[in-house]
Figure (cartoon, rainbow over the protein chains, first blue to last red):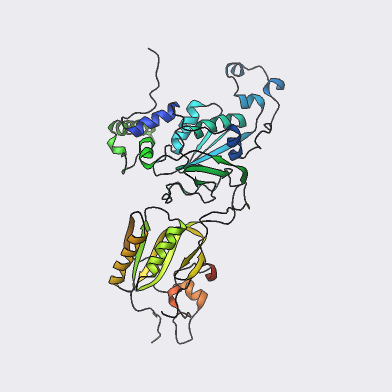
Length: 249
Length: 172
């Protein structure tokens, strides 16, 4: 029987969503054009060439190395792209993703990633064209709801605040807002205006967010209601404690 | 004996904490409803800053133009909101005014809110206030302020003109 990764324990919808995020078994909810995505990332002008930081690897004459033969470089590394970043903030009010699960999604399913996981935001550094592929995956699928999450390179404040009246997470720099039932973004991730209005689709309803979230909350699905997860967390804690215990010290 | 405590009565302070951050229209409606209630002494708005310009990161200096940073009218006084309103602290004269404020909030807010009585705005001047305003005279150590209601409403270093709105002074 072929090995099937288990990713995460638990029987609640939150645990299932966590497994979905980790395994990249994600439902695509919207289409965002490549050029629009490039514009909101703000690293290069849409349609322009990728600036490079070194010549393509094929032209560099690399030294003989068995590891280089085994590991195929990512398209961005092979072309010599710059390392760029994308950062997301997710609301604590039942946003589909959390920083940890964005990082799991990146680290398990993509190569050449450098995820940074913080309490309210998750930043990921990659070669530029790899980053665009990764961002497209995260932006178009159920891992991101643009009403409850935001692409924020700076001034990320909002993840722990109450939602606005329209159900959208607060954004101090007004990068994206609800317009005619759709979330529209007209600035890049650091708040610099761009030459287009990028339609990021309809935000999901409150009830739908409660189903799609990967956050345990007492007012939705509490952590303690998932016995298998509690058991798993306690086991990890116990093993870590035993491993760290040094009788001689 | 030197007189130091100029505020002797104890008005009631209430914190109105809505479930959502208020859009300017709702904030305006709420503040007007509270303002029309008899016995309200002062109100303090708290919330998250809406900056004019991007202050950090590669986009520093770019205009924000946040749509919620707009001018609202409360009790005939127009002022610009610098924040998205998250809570309103109200000081009232007595218990009956407190009930009226609660009813005003129920009329204005389309969603649930917390309504708590407590101590939210300072009632007596602190050392910083004395540093800013000084004593009235050598023998009178009360703070050198005509209207002590402004104490606690603004940061001692902030400009009063842009942060303080005085409504209906003649009646009061």
